Amino acid sequence: MSIDEIIQKVLTARIFKDRERLRPDYVPENLPHREREINRLAEILAPAVKGARPSNAFIYGLPGTGKTAVTRYVLRKIDSYSKNYAPSVGLRFAYINCRNENTNYRVLFTLCCCLDEKVPFTGLSTAELFRRFVRTLNTQRMLFFVVLDEVDFLVKVSGDDVLYKLTRINPELHEARLSIIGITNDLNFVEYLDPRVKSSLGEEELVFRPYTTEELADILLQRARTAFNEGVLEESVIPLCASLAAREHGDARRALDLLRVAAEIAEREGSPRVLEEHVRRAYGEIEKDRAVEIVKSMPLHTKLVVAAVYLLRNKKCEATTGEIYDAYKSLCRKLMMDELTQRRISDILNELDMLGVVNAKVTSKGRYGRTKVVRLAISEKALIDGLKSDVRLSSFLSCEILG
DNA sequence: CATCCACAGGAAGGACGGGGGT
DNA sequence: ACCCCCGTCCTTCCTGTGGATG
Image 1 (cartoon, rainbow, N blue to C red):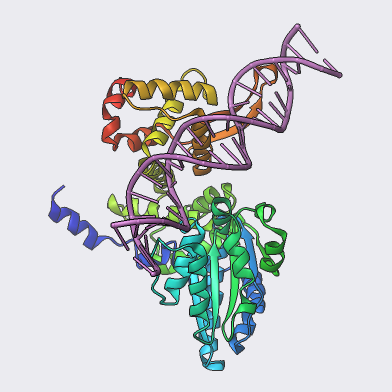
Image 2 (cartoon, rainbow, N blue to C red):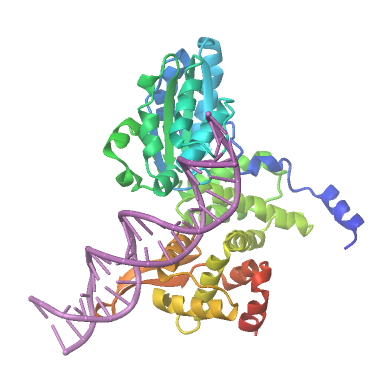
């Protein structure tokens, strides 16, 4: 295909009207089927429009149930109202995704950045950083909303230290007030928390139910109206996206991704309409891309562990920690590398489990010990593609895996 | 019923690279 | 220049344990 043809194809593409409407971070004008949650959160946060500090709130819900979207949506409203009703109180917002900012230091660093306070991104003690944060807060009259998305990551990695301090910060402040909105999709999260943090963070609690298939279809339909041109979707496309996403606990983000990628595939092929077949291919593509990216970004030894799991798959599709460690060690020897300890490999397997690359389950085999039983959870093709990009593994890949 | 396997996973700490304050 | 704190990644040493087996 020539470049002229490619460009011609884009120019004549008639599928998308407004692609942006399907982006995962797009917050639409209305969020269907989350009215109850919106109202609940609005009730909690409403005091802010008059400059009073709202209670801290805690939001639970599985991925893609609209937690983040609802929070952003309500805060946006609050912000616009407060400008009229309490202009003297500055509302500030910090949105922190704790999957990325998963240490106490990084969280405080980000908070300081939101207040335009210049702090070094490493070097200070967290206590000093906290002191500066408080000092900055005290320079102005403001209401500071701190949204901690996926806050379970922060606590799992770094403990609830900062969380504790943040929940107790208000008495130290003069004219500023701070409200925390914690978001998590781990329903057992509270168990890791210090009871004191639990009680002050969970002053208000909201639980977001997963969307049903019908609700997902409805959401997709509303987005599709503005995102696509009329009549480009085969009738069964939206129900299929909805039911595929519903299979994974009613995840709206997945459903939207599915629809967008399906449409992109259709467009790429020059198909005038998005067909059911495109959705099915999109489903495979999304899964695979995600897996490839994860594998690519792993450190070398983690890659070797995955490779070891892969090599053991032929015997039976499961392997124990000990078997994996032996296979890993022989890989290291072939590559003339130092091997890590079994203790470390055990942790790496848990990390891989968290990433969804493998499933690991501790199982007791009675007299024959207690071990993790591990199986690969991504496609072999994705794994190979992910490993292939690492030059250090190319020799091993060519002889061990590709034959 | 006690035993005992093959690990799980906690605790402590060390090496290292990044970056302070003074 | 000096000593500091931090996070990351890893090791060493350790105690704990579910359940088939004898």
